[in-house]
Image (cartoon, rainbow, N blue to C red):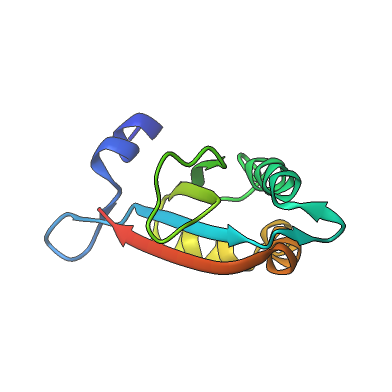
Length: 122
């Protein structure tokens, strides 16, 4: 199955007698501190974007990841959003503990005041 097919259709789980799609969509929204780590929120948002998008192609099962600080509307307020697609729930688990992701997490924890996460499968 091609990457495009997996994105559109999900990845079927085998052995259950039924196709069950396990592609995971992982969305995270952050509200940033006004200043942290010697920078303002805009600079920290830009650094988060650079760090996180550098993970593309570096973690097995991470199919796509994008980050934006150009929020049109948000309730409650958020400053940065991450949208990613992972091949499976197992891939999400591997992504979460991967050393390169954990390096991003270490910085992000220092600059955010709130975090919201949504994971769902298709």
